[in-house]
Each structure stands twice: as C-alpha cells, then as structure tokens.
Image (cartoon, one colour):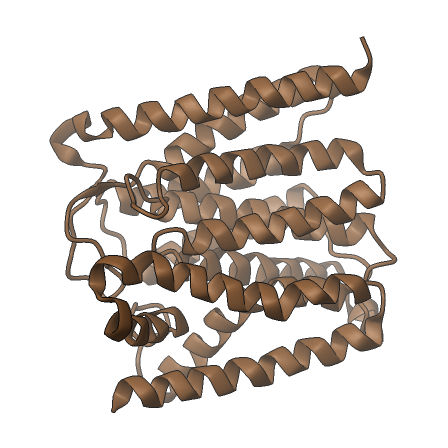
Length: 353
C-alpha cells in the first residue's frame, strides 16, 4: 500500500473520530456535575447568548489532538513535543476559568507567561527568517529570541481569546489562517507538517458544525488558548520552513488577531482602565451593534462573524500572490493598519450616536 493511501485513510478515519468526539461532548456535556461546564453568565460584556451553552469545545479539541498526535507518532516515529506540552499547559490555564475557578486576569497572564518562557527555552523554539535586518541581528541573542517568541505567542493566544465571543468568529478566522498555511506547506512539499495542519483543520470544522450558525457549544477559554497556541506554533514552523516567504506575509495573515490585542491595550491604557479586563469596545462588538440595528439580535450573532471574516478575507487573501515579495508585504501590512484604524473609528462614531 502506498504511503499516500495510508495517510489519506488515517485522515479519513480521524475525521470520523473527531466528529463523534464533538457529537458526544455536545450531547452529554450538561450531565457534568452541577452544570460546571455550562456558560450561564449572560451579563458579561462579551456574552451574546440567552441560554446556557456548554464550554466543551476545548476539551473535545484536546482529546482529538491527543489521539492525532499518538497516531502521528506511530506513522512517522516522531513525537511533536512542542505541540503536546505547550497546548496541554495552555489548555489547563484556560480550563480553570471554564470550570469557574476564579483567578485574577493578572495571575492568569502571569501563569501563561511563565509557562511559555519555560517551554520556549526548554524546547528551543525560535523564529527565523525575519525580514528586518536589525531584528535578525537581535534574534541571535538567546534572551531576546525567547522574549520575541513569547510576544508572538501572547498576541496570538490573547487575540484568539479576545475575538471568541460570537458564533463562528474565531473558528472561521482560524480555519482561514490554517488553510493558507496548509496551502503554503503543500506547495513547498512539507507533507508531514501538512498532515498536522489538516488534522487541526478537521478539528476546527468539527467544532464549527456545533458552533455555527447556532451554538450548541463554545470553545471556552481552554479551547481559545489551545488553538491560539496551536496557531502560534503553526505560524512559527511555516515561517521557518519557508524562507522564500516574507515574514510580513505572516503578520498580514494574523493582522486581525494582532490589531485587536494591540489597540485594545492602547485604548484601555489611554482610558486609565486595566488592559486585562474585558469591555464592549472591540471592533467585533462595535460591528455587532451596527448589524444588530439591521438584522435584529437573533441573526446578528452569526451574521457579524460572516461579515468580519469576509472583510478579513478580502483584505488578506489577495496577498497570497505576493507572499514572497517582502516590499509588497510590508506596504500591505501597514496599509491594513491604516484600514483597521479607519474602520474602527467609523464604527465607534456610528455606534456612539
């Protein structure tokens, strides 16, 4: 039997297993003790559901990922330590909030930073091929390299958690990002890594079947942290494996996650608010308020996710054709920065009036 047939068969079986894992968790999650995994907090700034919804998307994703990593190790005799340990650790940090263990946002951020520094150092994770000469020079210093890699993880993980408020918003965005990464790695013949990306895409699609357009489950903090960590690793590895691609292209791919975190931080500091506390002034919430005026509450939740991801795709995907052109990608990235500011400013004033 050809290796390609074995891999195709494995992914087909994995798709079925993953679907049934999500189906089982969706069907029986309410039976957990005292509804501990049900999101019943309808009054949070980022809460847009009227009935309790289970936060088991993260658990189902983790179980599916562990099964995949075990079979991957069997097929390729390679255990992906960074994917196992980092995602597992970040999952449990988020899971504390899902099971109502109240820890302060500052403590949670501290746990995240300490865990990531430990694993980045131990596993020697490093970002290469940065298209800025002074950064490449600084990255030769191990301490700066760890710090820079840490910041990339923090932006992507917290960006994922930040936009995980509407049905399908995070899931669809991550699906687009990882599909582009898959395309790049298939074109570069990085087949083993491509199988890892396909597995994550299968998990995301399985989740979206139960989250979009109507939410039967949420990712929870555990799921958004887990997939934020996975996407961080995917971006770093794709950048390192494809030196012909501009590193600014990967910044473009992540611009929505990056800018939401960055501008949220600046806005809250300017308003003398804690940067780690949630509010209702993020771009996806402002767009929801405007869409809500047109479609009403019932439809606006998932329509908002569609609109944001369509705009994101229109702004980002054409750049695939210039992904190896550093100059074009640099101008494209800074143009997106300007476009984001204009859109946010316009939405802010429209919803303020």
